Image 1 (tube, rainbow, N blue to C red):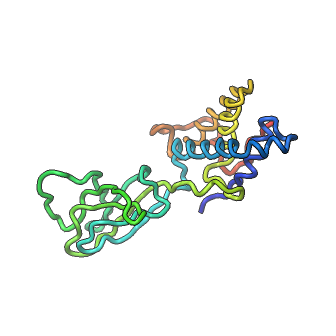
Image 2: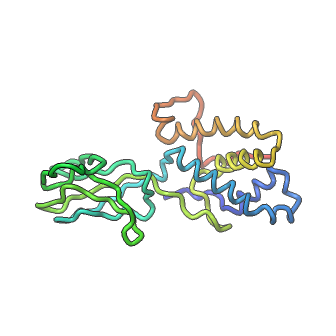
Image 3: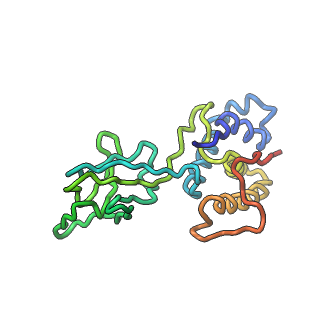
Length: 224
């Protein structure tokens, strides 16, 4: 279950206050599209930069006799599949990415390769080779779920709202050329390191900070 973070409207109000627009309701109304854009771009970047634990998913589905294709889960993005496995001889075996395009594929009675394919009826799919010949084969797809819709005022963000807000403030202050942008940039750099440490390491390396790790459920960072 995803934690409940702040809504787009709540974050936009905080962003406006951080930019000095808090007492200018008319100005905020005019800036809504660009403020939303800063928040949406910040979420997209953070979703790509950090493998958030609570977005990690496993989907298990049988690949039937002679079946070659499975649909990806609706919330599985094409470019962020962590691994695909087949349950063969009482163990999960990781399949190889990329189906050979030359030579004859020897049938083992179970899949060895997989390949992500384009859309069929607006659904992303996975193709397998060889196909099962003796019995259905359970397939496990591991992935990081895509962010949920973040365009309406009552939509909640899909990454921790404090670090998202900090990154959006950096983008906005840079856009409006406000002089204190570096203060927020320094804060964000530290927050990102701790976020990665809490979520499967920093750039693939084991990270053991001497202080408490970043907590996405803690009170958000207060901004002036």
